Image (cartoon, rainbow, N blue to C red; front, side, top):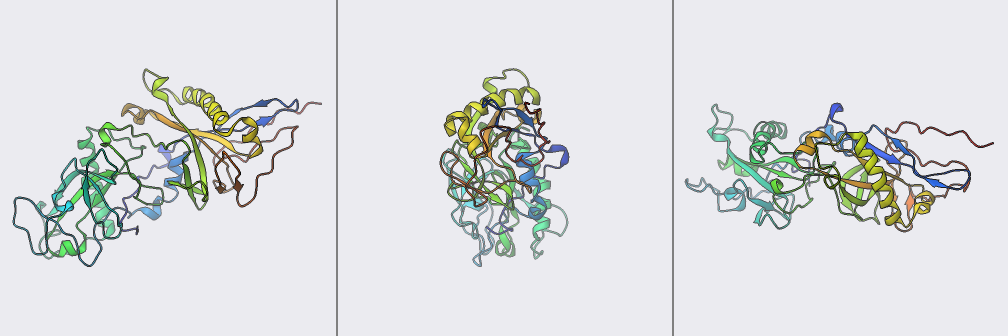
Length: 372
């Protein structure tokens, strides 16, 4: 998918950076295993998105770029030359769309309970707005102008559609489909606002099922999913674990089953997730020795109050390894044989302290006094 065909990822900003936690496995001189909770103040997925968002500032679904243009129909009004019945032209709020070709966007309406790529929140006819910018014969807007239009119209449309319950750090982002330049030349000025998932690299090919308003918007993945890597940062996009990736999902934890009141603070989340992810690591990898011998680290994110109040209550337990620039590149599932940055991991000595390389943003781990 080209950069003109992808929705813009939200920019988290410094104040919205996510917290992640690391639990690095250590072995004491006596040989006993323990999992100290070394805390990190780093936004796991927000950093992955924020680090590349400058390059994605114009990335959104911009519509049809093929020479054939957009086939569209505006019910109830005469169709201008070049328009024909199609999914784009008849799509209304609440409709779900999918496509097979990201370049031509061969849109099809599908049942929202089935896999889809885009949920329409509003259809907006720009020709109804005063001024000449969108009038007959007007120039097709560039990608920056469409990004402004998306922010101006589609953000409020999503808020209205969901009753203000869009998780600003969840897995859905605000997107837009425009009629494309051929459709624009034929007089089409209607844009479709919607919600969809998008990777940190701007890929909008991740499918979802069900309507957003009925979904937990938590940014989670199924157990066993590996998340791709690009320039030492996670892409937020699933990939085959046999291919290079940043980390692997061990489990999904529902904090709502444990915290039944208001939003839990980060300290309480950390304490709960420390125990849950330690157990997940034992079950997923076959014991603590496997984590140590593969020099991997377990970690997780936090949910903030905004996410909690709109119903996002789930977090992933993750396993990966930090590098100087971000994440090391892992090939193979953590359940079996792996390579890290092209090399098989070397198990640490059986005595003394050994700590995996910290993930980005981690504070240096305190080193306990060595026995004499």
